[in-house]
Length: 325
Length: 250
Image: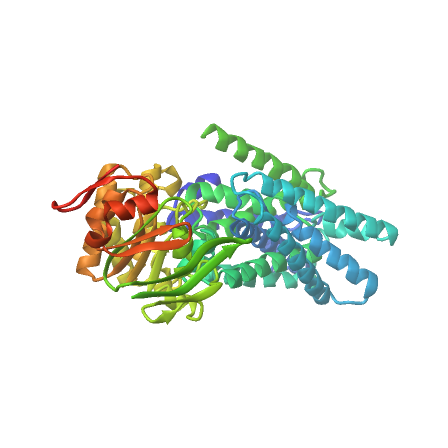
């Protein structure tokens, strides 16, 4: 993956595509039920497993991975800080709070409705974070992620408290620990909206790059700064809410992937976007496959795997950056 | 023409600009001079709609600032603020190319690419085009930002201390470029400079400010004299007249 990032142009694209396809093939193959590709067309049961479970699960991993990596990229652009992402700065926690409240007061609400409410609370929570982040001194870049962690922690504590008071702690885990094992056909399709959000980011890529240069430069270049900030917030909130509702919180994807890509490609959003999306999709799918294999036939949630892999990756990223000055 | 009428500005009870009325003629170089805290940067950012007007009116080429859509104004007026922190990892070529954003809104055409390539050559940056801006020295970065501003191709260009970080060679290059652009393309350039002799050598007009007030303005040869300099900067300095350009000794 890392080697592929250094290449550019069609060759890198082909290589990344081939890697991703190989991962998809592995993902379709790994699971408790034996599945052989040869029998897909002849054996009804095999086809059933692939179409109803394996394929939806694989697609869900790809969509949420790409979405979360892009959400991280956008959030870093909005906060003008490299070290924030939705899962560590309160966005995902705000979304989970929205779902919790919906579950409490409107238990019969559909998944789409929950997503809508979660998007709204995520929007509110992230706006507050950004308002704080923009007031912090730019000379201290590490303050922003620290404040984000504390903010996310406080929201998480509220979440736990409300869930504990209302006997919903068990549900809470479903939203806060990202997991794909429950994904079946008919229960993940909402994630395609994340793909639409990625398309929106691609469409507005140059504007986001201008936005990353700050308010004065943006206004000087005739960009509607506040409007673009709102569009970015919407993208981050909707993607976070979608993934929290469908699979739960998956940490570090939005942090590690954009940072890694930025090393080789820079922060030109249009240029970085394909690598970030493909990298996020690949990372989440790899971690999901790992989670299925580590203590086969049991599973480890992808959120937990990424907690470990992502944290290690981020540490390496930080240390290597320092050693290069 | 930039027309400034009765513009005042206060920040938290402090008067930053006090009833400024001024006309910057179309075409040529106008130097904005004055000691620190004179309100030069504030005036510039008001002209460039970077902060809202509190009192008075400003029009740029007949377009009222604050009422004209920002997108339209971006094709008429470009601004470089002092020291914009560029935190993004962008290549020199990419950053300069963003100067064309008001014209293509994200979909650059061949004309945009031609202007970017020209500007990179003009500012001696073609060899650096593929380097990340963060790896450059302060002076090189300053040149990139000025190039980006001129790349916007507007009739009006506002520059806040563009000579910051530049060595004598590149400072002279920049002022000569500014002069040439003003002469050949009849653009209007307003530039804040601290080195009074650069203003003397390259500006057609001088605007002198002090403590938020306009002290003097007019053609360089008429305005730049020992009396005005003492009034604005607070000490005697001799000005060598008779030779071109004027030279202030300080």
